[in-house]
Image (cartoon, rainbow, N blue to C red; front, side):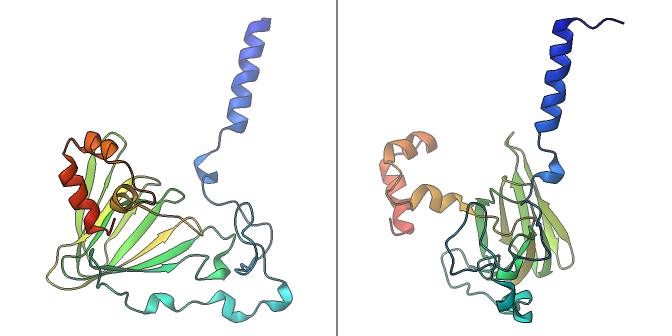
Length: 222
């Protein structure tokens, strides 16, 4: 069987695409090249993470974190207190590609629509009744009311939210496949930036007048 020159180039191109296409299993933080790399938070932030603390300065305390044992402060406009368990609060997570948050909800509290650009999120309701939902890039909403012991997953980068729909407080624990998943809150990203997003952009996007945009901005101190 003789392969033509053009067919050979096409085959080579397909092979190169397969080689350089990132597979889903590789779409999280880079794998570590050592047992651990406790973050040196006082060092200059490097290209993709924190530099390692010298082994001689590492102690057992670097691998334990009690921050998620404390209830978060929910006295804010959203009625939610989020306690972060990422590399910036728990340096032992550096290079390990994981982190966890605790979210406490006052009655009626909401974790407003937001995204995590660097991680998929999974979580479990510990207490209360919580409406959890996310929106796909095709503008399809998937949502469900969950109670204690039930789990959810939010695909990476999609807009999602949680709302306490029970009569009392609620608590969820969430995990990420990134040491620093990042967060972009939709309300503050649009209405509380510095400098502010121009009104003509927002009025056109939401099909409302300046007075509506100004009222919303005032709610966030803008």
